[in-house]
Image (cartoon, rainbow, N blue to C red; front, side, top):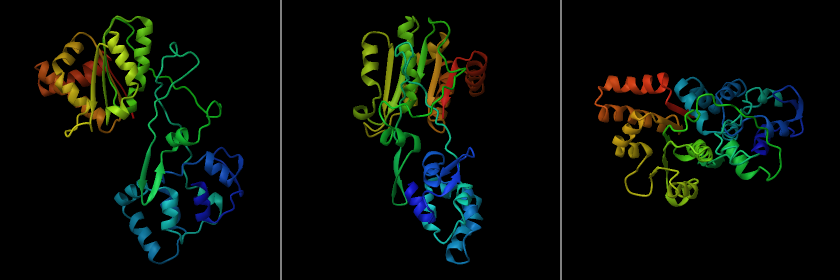
Length: 324
C-alpha cells in the first residue's frame, strides 16, 4: 500500500520528511511505520479540493465535500489508494503537504486473554483478523493484519504498553458468582478470569455465555471451556452459534431463554460482565437485562431500567462492561 500511495503521488520513496514526532525519516519508512493508510480521513478531501483543477473531477469532489452526510460516509470504506486514484488530477506540491493530511497510527487496545499466574512471563491476546473488500480491492485491518501477515515470531520488535483496567475486575470475594457474556473476541478477559478463579480456588460459581458464527471454526478456546465444564469449574456454559441453523441465535437469545436463572443469580449477588462490540451486541445485552428485571422481578419498565442502570451499574458496581 505504501508503494501504491507513493506511486499515485509521484514522489521519491527516499524523499526526506519528518515523522509525527518531528524526527527525520525517508517518506516510505514513515508511511510504513507512523501513519494510517488503510482508512482515509475527512481531512484529505479538503486537501484534494485545494489542489485539483476545474473540471469533471473537481465537480465530483465538491459534491462530496459540500455535503456533510456524504462526506462523513465517503472515506469510511476507502483507503488513500482508492481516493488518490479516483481524484488523480490532484497534485500535492511536496511529501510534507500530503503527510499533513494523514492521521498518525494510534494504539490498539486488546484485552489480555490470560492470567499472569497461569502463564508467567506471558500475555495472551485473542485477535480476529479483519479482511474485507471494497471498491474492487482487498483490504486488511492495520493491527490485526500486521499480526497475521507481518509480525515475526520470537522477535521483540512490537511496541506495547499495559493499560490498567480499574473497574473490569473479578469480585474481591472469591465466593461471589460471576456471569460472563463475551461473544467473539470478547471472550478474551473471561478466559483470563476463569484461569485466575481456578488458581485461586474461588468457590463462587462461573457462568459463561459465548457466541460466534460457526461452532466448528469459531469456538474460541472451546476445548479449554469444555474441559472446565467437565471438571465442574465452569458451572454453566451457554453457546450461541448464529449461523449454524436457519434462524440466527445470539447471546441475548440465550439470556432470554435462561432469564429465570439469570435473575436468580443476580439476586444472589452475582456480578455480570459483558465484553465485545459496543454498537450492537452490548446494547442488545443491556436491553435483555432490563427485560429480565421486568419479567422475572415483576418490575415496571421504569423500575427495571433503574435497577440495571443505577443499582447494578453505579451503586453496587456488579454490572461491568469492557466494550469497544
